[in-house]
Length: 486
Image (tube, rainbow, N blue to C red; front, side):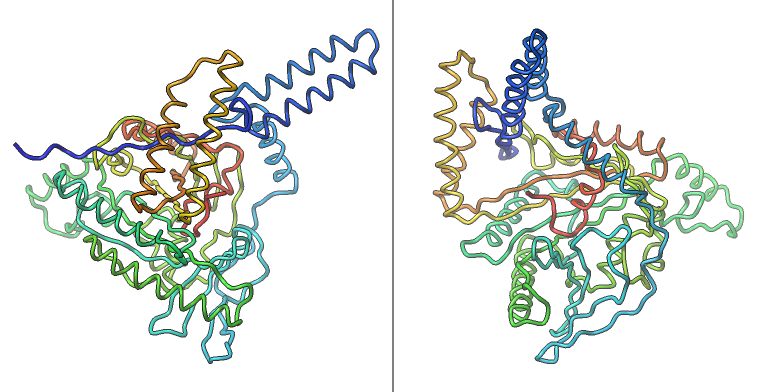
């Protein structure tokens, strides 16, 4: 008999609170309701006590009652913030952001950073993001400079053998190779700030309008060709898959400084190391994308026909759409609708290496993003000790208050112990978060695609939570910008 299929387990996301499992926002809500109740009791005379009880009940209820992992008080804050963004005026902006040539800004060493000459950040570009190009080395590298987090992000396209067609042993070997890649990126003293894996799938448009590749309408009438046309037209459209890895390092405080030269050397070095590690893992990385390819890669998600994106995006100086508007449940850009989900829970049971196949292989336009941040070993050890202490104190407090133990808390405690053992064995520790974005041309198609994505995620043992009220910001977390972790 062959070796049994390897299985993998995920620890539940830690959701421990400050007191009795309550988060700081929940405790602040209870405290504010208590203060308001005391004020009402003292200032309203006879009606003070009923009013105080009502205020206290509403405050405690909004702090404790939760939906989709968030208490009612947080939903109220999200609704207020979303309404404020909408009240500031329409977010649609028809002023074009493309077609303006770029200029070179010299460095003391003669190297240059190419920047687009465009108007101030208006319209749809994420705040703090600027696309530039490093031209001082052997090959130009397009980077997304993030002024908010002070990082430089470079992107590499990755290809490989179809994972679903491999046998379980080869799948496990590929995953072990990916673990080695992550372990090297999370080594002690690493200069890597974050690493992001992005996978996009969309219907393959490399066929003619009748869905028949290689047989144009001008070809002679042939019963075999007609039969093939009928067969292909009735089949589900094939899916194309593209994968990227975005590598983020700390950027300089200002462009052109000596720190900028140091950041460029670090970025090029980490990209070379990443390329070697990926090849050792039987993956095929491309050269780092230059600025034009980076623009085309980002712009492709906003365009309906993927087959035409190279010619349409090739001459653009900015990938951002000319107009967008944030709705409560989705983001509307020029010609497309996007709904973003957060992976709120990973598989609670042991899974096989290909557990993500239902989500990745289902039809439709979809983006899956996993953002990871290496945690220094010393900080990881402190967090583990703090988590163990917090678990022990919380368990004693809950026991005194009469709360029953729960299986989830037991699993969280086991996960902390397992994390401590892995750190002791020398494994790298990462913070991570996953997101899924669904793209469609209209609202009806978006609803269907969202239902399919939710069903596929359930088959992959994932729990998706739609990020209502935050769709504008959340969508940027599925772009190769290194964002998505607090």
